[in-house]
Length: 313
Image (tube, rainbow, N blue to C red; front, side, top):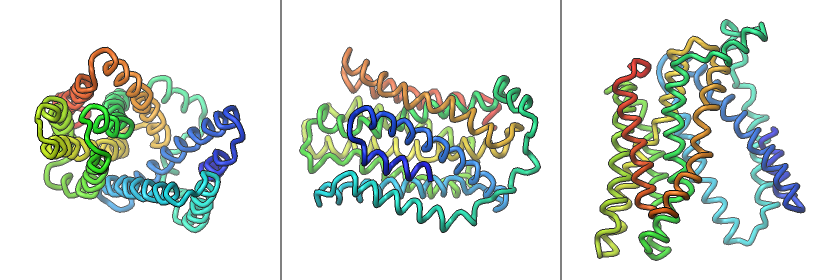
């Protein structure tokens, strides 16, 4: 409810100061929802008896595509942000009221930690497993941020293709969504460790394909095809990273799930803060191709960590 109401408040902001306060509240409720929903997802996995976390994240990806489509319709129709955000907030509140009865209140009763000092010990001395998973999550969120915030800039400024052919973000989101719905089947065939290894390899190959080959071809059609292929690999690679990490927390961590996900997200969310500064600084000092190659190296780091660390076996 706080998530919906803070979105509504953003649409009512009268000045930059009010907007800053409402955006801060929106970010807080966003993160609380993220941790709570993933905690619920882990609980549902346990009740279900097999890994289905990736499907939940696939639902998130579908909603991201739907949100972008609704935003496009609102812009084309000259609907103001106030009415746009009011409509979405009302929809979220309605879905919350209808769906709240399905939330699993007692899933983690056996793991509940009543002693506040014991809770602090979990945070003060987190499991090494959570730190390793958090680092992989940090790398993954740097990659996501690089695609969410910079893929449009890459097609427009680096490749200089017409607006009608700036499809990099679209193909990335499509492959990200498809990959998440296929991840559960991939787990059964290869296991979670191999899926993470393949994901790191796809990220590495995808970024280097775009950075090294994407701007070297003269044909505009080939430019779009080569870079779209690179972005597709990145989308497929990043698709199962976060759901797999969260699923591993539920399967392997000895820390109560809510606390474990809080620790994990505290580490991994740094990636979203670092990515704009990292990519912007490298792009200014050299060019954006170099920035994308540096981000691509994080895929190689993920591959090496998931191969040699016992946490992922």
